[in-house]
Length: 114
Image 1 (cartoon, rainbow, N blue to C red):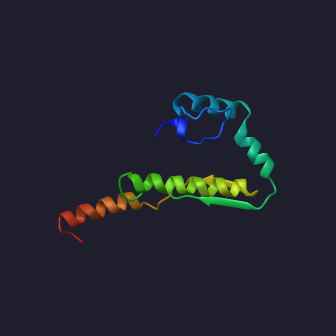
Image 2 (image 1 turned 90 degrees about the horizontal axis):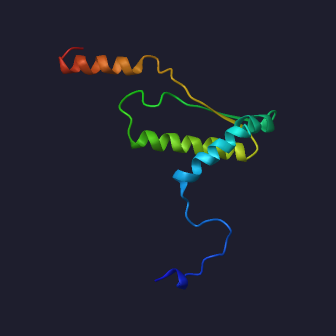
Image 3 (image 1 turned 135 degrees about the horizontal axis):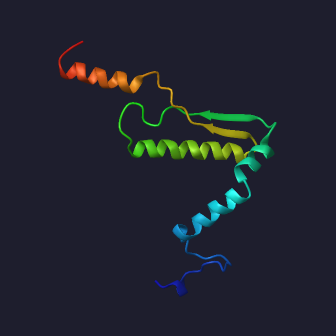
């Protein structure tokens, strides 16, 4: 089937995303207008929604589940911002020694120690 046989809407924007070329311009524009701080000012005083995240991969190597986790958290934070809340994402790094404790535990098990 060719594109002549598909009923697509006529628009002024390109049907090709071409993100590798366009995205740097978007980011530069957002920096120029200080978009993040504009959002912060606009939502000041609104109901708060804070997503305080834990460490990115405290108990193992980074993997696709880590990426999915971060993407979902980004979507949730942005949803609440667009819903009129003062929504912020706070990255966290405190895992109370878990990674090093886990590595020591693995070594003990390997050497048959308790």
